[in-house]
Amino acid sequence: MANVTVIGSQWGDEGKGKIVDWLAAKADIIVRFQGGHNAGHTLVVGNTTYKLHLLPSGVVRGKLSIIGNGVVVDPWALLSEIETLRGQGLEISPETLMLSETAPMILPVNSALDKALEEARGKGKIGTTGRGIGPAYEDQVGRRALRLCDLAHPETLKAKIEKLAFYYNALYKGLGAQPFDVDELAEKLLSVAETLAPYIGPAWRVLDKARAEGKTIVFEGAQGVMLDVYHGTYPFVTSSSTVAASAAIGSGIGPDQLGFVLGITKAYTTRVGSGPMPTELNDNVGDTLTERGHEFGTTTGRKRRCGWFDAVQVRQAVTVAGVKGMALMKLDVMDTLKEVKICTGYTHGGKTYDYLPAAADLQEKLEPVYETMPGWQTSLRGVRKLEDLPENALKYIRRLEELTGVKAVIISTSPEREDTIRVTDIFQAA
Image 1 (cartoon, rainbow, N blue to C red):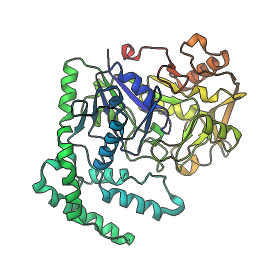
Image 2: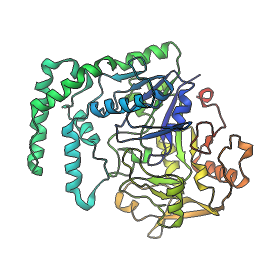
Image 3: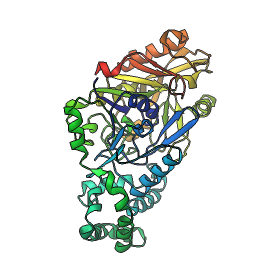
Image 4: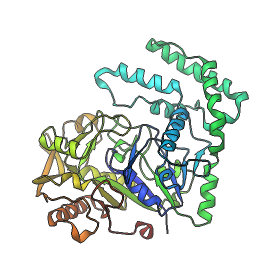
């Protein structure tokens, strides 16, 4: 068996949780490699729904789950999530969860600044969750971040916070906000240091040992390629790189170990927050997709914008992220539609585009070019074999494969764990 890297091929919310949960059943280790608790995965197991924000999906399976160095960690949010899942009957301990000692922490000053800046943007809001993700990544790049390893050294912790205060209090002053208290933050961090200490360690060494022993690793990404800070719809993006290559950087393992790159792809398009979305639907079809797909953010509860499948965008994501196959999710949400459409290109000012141009102002003006196909108008719930799919559903899938350049190796027909068609054994295909 080989490793698998799971990423989103759209604007996030594609259904990565269900697939990573299924992959975790066969894997030895699951690694979350970027993002923070601004992301969310929903896992439905029988009658229980687990909502994960920071923890890797492997915790539900009781597998060793690692939060890599590419993740920004809010210690209080993490502990709260652990307690919530324990309340649902899951056992989480240092034997099943490890935190990379070099992962940067999200501090109260980060979330306070995030909210203040978003408010100051007015109509130009990015759509951030306000949880401090962006400022925490800025601290890491600016070499002023506090990392999890710092919790083990209380004698130097306060001095590092004072350096942070020098930067943040200058920003707060400009925004008319109150400066933060160094002693108060130090006290808050020390209050959780002892609880977190057993989980913190050199994750890269654990992963190297796993590699040497031939163990199978699943690398789990958050958000999607179109929210990548380099390749997404900038500036309406997240603060980390969401492509497969980031799994190596954010985990501490060589890029040769990433294995099969699986792009989780929703059968239609959704987006949360601001930014261009050429296929957005503000009509009854959009409402149907929202209602049937329960399109509300796991983390924020915000209603997602819905639209037709954008094959241009997904094809671009496949290219820049190195996707080898897609897991097609939520096909069942489209069961009642008489016809379905696929965006095959864009137009603006008499010019046609077969890719998503980089300029934000141009992205906002693009008009989609659609191809229309008949819907299947029958329930897919419970379908677990390719040959049992309605003919029109199968034709739709085949057309998506042609337009995106990758095969649908997994097809999900309902939120349930077992309502999944496994076309290819991706562990063997890696």
